[in-house]
Length: 113
Image 1: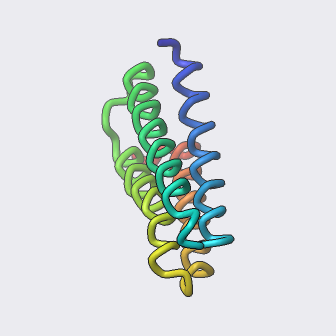
Image 2: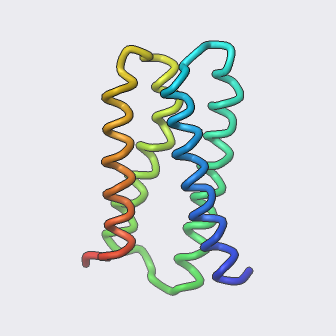
Image 3: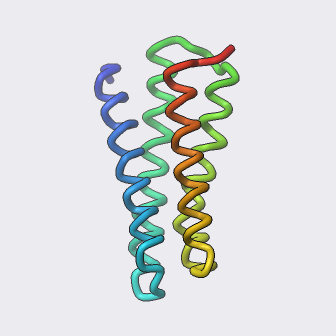
């Protein structure tokens, strides 16, 4: 596949994943849990596969900033499920999600060695 397709898939799934996560924060009701957690998992998988495809196309290897982005991805992916288990903590989870997102974006643009 082309590098642009991987890039579009990665960024679009990241934006949608964060949107689904904040949707879980907005209304962590048990009736919506299955759909939101399922969407979160699918988007998370697409984001991971597209990210590794992009790494391969660009020939970066596996530097430190990619490992940090993987930790951020794992944290953001877990937030929707945690929001349903701990609805009283959604404000803290929202702040943690924003911080993880900002760290991931910083890693992409700065790529520290």
